Image: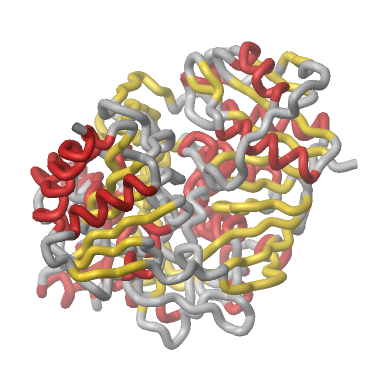
Length: 321
Length: 255
């Protein structure tokens, strides 16, 4: 009997929706599906985790899991895994989960696979490399639990549509004082107005081709007239400090799957494509006709984005009125 | 203050990567560079020793070709380096690499270990934390700003929603995002001096590791090209670009 765990990212007030995707995937490969939720709000999250197939939720509302980065959670996971012996633990590819999984690997000596977009068995995973152009199947060997981090939106979250509620098992692990020294002392949100990047129907992303940070305003204006649209950016642009890091779409940043993705002055580096190539439709505007982004575009306009974008904003305004 | 910076030599980050017959990334005979993500780490390390004294040691694992990456870091100003080279490390996965690097870092001694958040070729993005755990020190990760004072490292940690301020006592491990620093360019003098700087070479057994410690736990069982998408409509803008896109958006029912 295969036992698969999902490590749920618990944020103040709610559990991250990535856990529901992971549980949906876990159901497909295991008969025992369980979740681990650590930090304030964990017990409350058990109901939702159960809706997506967690039969058991190991939960602790202890603040230490939120206040101290990674080590307490990795320690607790290790203790729990020793007791219950899961075959595989699924993590999201988030900052927090990367910290926890990386730490846990050192403790368990088990294999860790990052950036997976599928798992077909407790010891078999799939990843896409080179910007999604190549699919690689990987056999996971060595001791259990295998650790797999999955890219967001690899699986569509589906509730079980009934069944018994999850059994909540309180986590009684005592975290040693020595593991709490990396402390989160402040939290700041830098949320742009409008919908979240991951949830918007349309994403308008800018790259170096915008030439100057001020030109991002053109994208904000366009997103505003489209409605339910969010603005994203490439790594080059966030590294240059034009917009904050949470705008970033790509390998390092967010993964988006909107109805339409509009790439403006984006060349289409591998690292960017990974985060957006699953969009339903892709529009690209770039001066360089050879830019790799045109290879995956449904509609490509070879031209000056600084002219096309303001004209598009006006055109949409006109069509809407 | 002794700073160790983890550095990786990667196939040309702007080139087109290739897999060899053994399904491993082709690294030999391919032009390469110090991972651009690591330049930010080297710069962060140099800023710490510029302000507090001490030395920056580069620790790298890779084939002999990786010396080119080490030399780049030394020419930026790093003081010395360690290269772990061993035929037994070919195809090393994240755990193996972490064990090797942790052993080499331990040998070098440190107050702070700095790494990039992920490599530009493998993108695993968990290795530094594994190293931190093996060393038994706290880690503060995804730093977009970093300050060290009074034996405490304090960073702004990138999050999905913005940033957190996180701090930890030294010794500690830090990972830096690309925005954290502006890497300096090597000067001519720096390039000349780099040739004289000490580089120690270790094998796996020099580090006290056994062949079992460095046996990979992942095996590629298949590689295939992803299904290609049909070609789209690519047109030169002749003044009607905006209208075409608007019609496309209407078609997609998003406006």
